[in-house]
Image 1 (tube, rainbow, N blue to C red):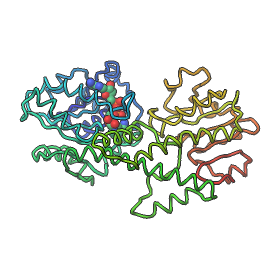
Image 2: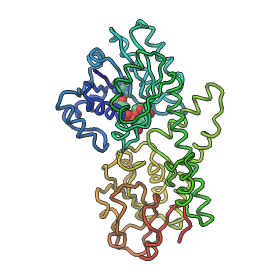
Image 3: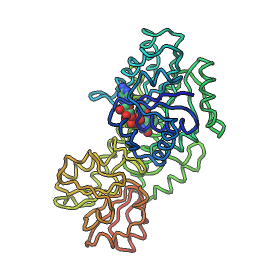
Length: 435
Ligand SMILES: NC(=O)c1ccc[n+]([C@@H]2O[C@H](COP(=O)([O-])OP(=O)(O)OC[C@H]3O[C@@H](n4cnc5c(N)ncnc54)[C@H](O)[C@@H]3O)[C@@H](O)[C@H]2O)c1
C-alpha cells in the first residue's frame, strides 16, 4: 500500500520504517526542512536501536521517501498517518493540539479521492470528532474516514514494539476501513498481536488511560519504596512479591527516579484536563502527578543529604541524563530538575551520556559533557547513576575515581550494596535501608 507519515519524529519514523520494511511504499513528511534534508543524506535525527539500518535499507530500495512536499505525499497515498507532537500547552495542562489541527487543515485541499486518515498522535477523547468536522467543512464526507489508531511503542524498544505489539487498537465503526487496516497490519497480527476494534472515542481514551495506568504503577511502587527504606525492607523483594500475582504483573514495578519522557508526564495531565472538560474528577491520576513531582524533589533532597548539604565546588557526575536508556529523549527527564538545583548550591556538574551532548545543559557554565564514563568519574565527589545504560553497570569506581571519600548514589539499584560495603565505598541505593 501507499502510506504517508505526517510528522517524522519518533513515532512517524519508526512507523514509516517498519511499514516500509513490510513492503509498503511510505512517504515520510515533515515541515522541518533540515530534518528531511538530513534524512535524505542518511543522517537520522533520533537515537533508536536498529532504526538507522532499517531506514537506510528501505530508502535505498525506494520504499521510503523523505519529503516536505505534503501535496505529493497525500495525493500518492491511500492512508495518511498523523504523527505530529501533542505536547503540553504552555500555561495549562491540556494537550496542545495546534500541530494536529494545522496538518488537518493543510491536507484537506489535497483530498480528491478516498483517504483513510489515521490519528497516531495521542489526543484527548472526542478530538477525532473535531478533526472530522474540520475536514468535512471542505471535503465530501464519502472521500475520507478519520480513525484513531494510538501508538504504544516504547522509545528504546520501538522497532520490537512495532513488530510484536501486545495489541493494535483501531477506533472506527466503518467496516470497510477496518478490513483495509486489518490487511495492512496482517503481517503483525499473524505473529500474535491482538487486533481490537472499538469506537474512535474508545481508542482515543484507551491510549491516555493506558499511559496513566502505567504511570500510576510506577508512582505506587516508588511510594512503597519510601516505606521500605524506613522499615528496612528491600523494595526489590516487594516488587517481585507483588508482581508474582498475575492480576498485577511484574512490569513497571521497578523503583527509580520520577517518571519522565515525552508521554507519561504530559498524557497524565492531558487526561485530567480532558476529564475536567466533562466535569469528571480523576483524583487518582491527580495524586499520581503530585506524587511524581514530590519524587523529583525527594531525590534531589536525598542528594543534598548524602553530601551533608555541602555542595559548593563539589564535583557531581551524572551517569546518564536521559529519562531511560536506549533513547536520546530528554523530555521531562528528572536530570533536568536536579541539575539546576545542584548548580544553585554551588556544585560542579559533569555528565556522561551515551547519546551525546545535550542542548538542555548548554546554558550552564558549570556543566560539562563527557563521552567517556571513566573520564567523567575521575576525581568526582559524588557519582549519580541516573540512567541504566548497560555501560554503567560494571564500573570499578575505586579504580576510576581515584579520590578518597567519594560517594555513589545509585538511583537505579544497579550495584550490590553488600559488594560496595566490602569495597569500602560510600554507596547509597533507593528503596532499601542503607547497609
Ligand atoms: N515518542 C513516543 O515514545 C511516543 C509513543 C507513543 C505515542 N506518542 C505520541 O505520538 C505523537 C508524536 O510523538 P513523537 O515523540 O514522535 O513527536 P516528535 O516531536 O518526535 O515528532 C513530531 C514531528 O512532527 C513534525 N511536525 C510538526 N508539525 C508538522 C506539520 N505541520 N507538518 C509536518 N510535520 C510536522 C515535527 O517537526 C516533528 O518532526 C505524540 O502525540 C506523542 O504523544 C509518542
